[in-house]
Length: 201
Image 1: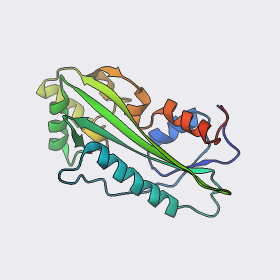
Image 2: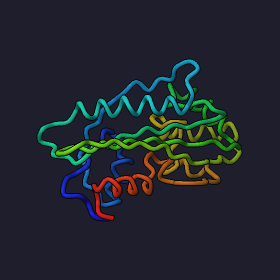
Image 3: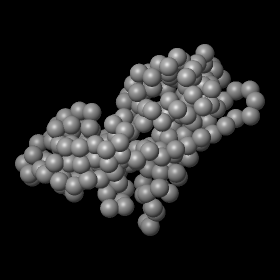
């Protein structure tokens, strides 16, 4: 892939999402934004992701600078889904241990929803997609769970783990996009960027 003449504004402070885009050859301008990521009573996981990503997109569009000269805005949210429930980021180490224990020896799903809004002359266009990947953890002892949590790696991660780091040692199987579990599904994003004419195919 070749980058467009104008960069993509990434509405996220995640170094992993930036790295994935840059590995695709996409020029990136980062404008980290925030949105309410708390779950609501009775809210379905897919509805949660739609709401959060829409809020992030609004925040990123509002955070644009006249000097950015970006071709589009991209935002995303990644959630760990177990038995239909959204596992967000852990509140503390005890919460992280409980999360990892609930995932141990089982298969869960990681959903990343991303949205891209074109900018500039002519009619703007927004596309969004949710990509799902199945992840299986090997069985884990309490001591092994505590040792992983003690690394601090999962403190700011959905589900309290990072598959691209030490967490790789507790993941026995992935079915689907690996980069989706990291935080941004590279193939699907590339396909959308190409379809929008934002990068060369």
